[in-house]
Length: 75
Image (tube, rainbow, N blue to C red; front, side, top):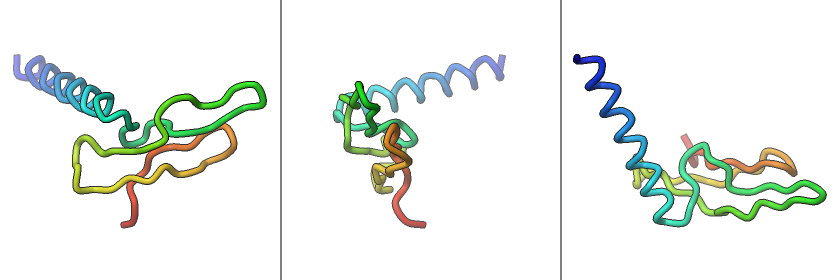
């Protein structure tokens, strides 16, 4: 029973973080925030927000032409 309750709360918190990130129009931590391929270009958010910790800034980090990702800024 305790394990089921733990899983439920984990899923509920994940859903709440996803909704918060969607409401801001920005990508959440470790989500895509840019990229393009010859015939395709990222049309999603290019800004980042850490919905779990609003005091911790995120940066849209360029990985390669096809992918940029939201990562924590600094140490």
